[in-house]
Amino acid sequence: MGATILVADDDRAIRMVLNQALARLGHDVRMTGNAATLWRWVADGDGDLVITDVIMPDENGLDLIPRIKRVRPDLRIIVMSAQSTLLTAVKATERGAFEYLPKPFDLRELVNVVERALNVPQSTSTAAPDEVEEQLPLIGRSPAMQEIYRAIARLMGTDLTVMITGESGTGKELVARALHDFGKRRSGPFVAINMAAIPRELIESELFGHEKGAFTGATARSMGRFEQAKGGTLFLDEIGDMPPEAQTRLLRVLQDGEYTSVGGRVPIRADVRIIAATHRDLSHLMRQGTFREDLFYRLNVAPMRLPPLHERTDDIPALVRHFASLAAREGLPAKRLDDAALERLRRYRWPGNVRELENLVRRLAALYPQEIIGADVVEAELAEATHAEMPTETTAGEGQGLAAAVERHIVDYFAAHRGALPASGLYDRVLREIERPLIVATLGATRGNQIRAAHLLGLNRNTLRKKIRELDIPVVRGLK
Image (spheres, rainbow, N blue to C red):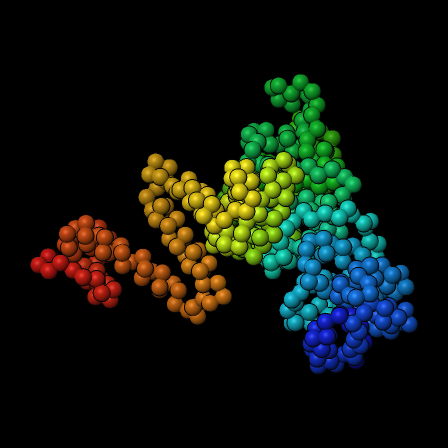
């Protein structure tokens, strides 16, 4: 039999869409545009499930959730909101919502959430954590960031081990801190250690501590990071750089829940939540034999991938405003970027991700006198940054400069065709664009001598001739 679903949203179009979709599944849908009617239905004992918006004309939907939970603790609530920030997702989860969906939502996903809400057994625990201080540790409302917010909201009330992957500068430590600050261990310490920043021979001592006399120079007992993080969260950054010996000890902690200090004999109970992060490809390291496969699966219980900035360019204006505000609070002049400047930022490939953007905004605030920054200033800064990061013959092997140029060309192509990409054929098109100038340049260097050109290119002579015809490349007559 179908369920009775109570829908509260002040947007009539959304109510009608939900009504049609849920009615087709056999559910009885009751709709209202205000919180007062929803509360009356709930108080009267009506409904098997609630779907509510946050912003309604008479009351905030988030404020209604605790009241509903007091009178109907088993009634599940799905929250929708166009105010799609991490704080919205966290507040919805903290106040007892079953799930949070950002607007605009995917109808198929909402239907799946409804089915889960109606069929998944109730948890044995209904206790909600205390309210947290309102803050926004992460910025952005792009679909990619919505997935991160929802993952944080789901994981914050657990002690599951989390593996955060993503390029350098994407904000992995910010996510780890958010999981801690909004989680049930927030009253405990947040302790971070970067594996790449500590000499390999000292990592075990840093993690697990050491006893007096454990090694030369150990003149007193020292607490390790596991002990320092007791009752809280231990963030293991750049876990891919952990040496094999320390990997073995960490695996034992994850398996047995206890460890011994370096030089110690008495086991110490580990009372921490572990969050690991890396920008490296751990599957590649496992194939090389430098990272333990069993440790990976122990750490990768709840994986989270942070998107690089070029996958969330719609968040750039909000990030720029945020960083400009931070710079102003630190005493730098207040600045803002005009629309053309923001559009230029969207087209940049951001190899340094959010960290690079933050540094750029601070630099603009510090070095330029104008209050409104235009595209010409941004263009000059980005050109300088691109020049600085280009590999040279002394620092990179042959071909890296070409690879960087090709990557820039492809990224710029995607940026210029946002929303209107070709249906197919991009692979062949890019190969053609690279192949033709390569053959033309090689023929020029050999003064049209196809035999020498084929040798330089590593191609069969007949293959080169075929490509010359296919690519319509002019040749110098009289040379073979």
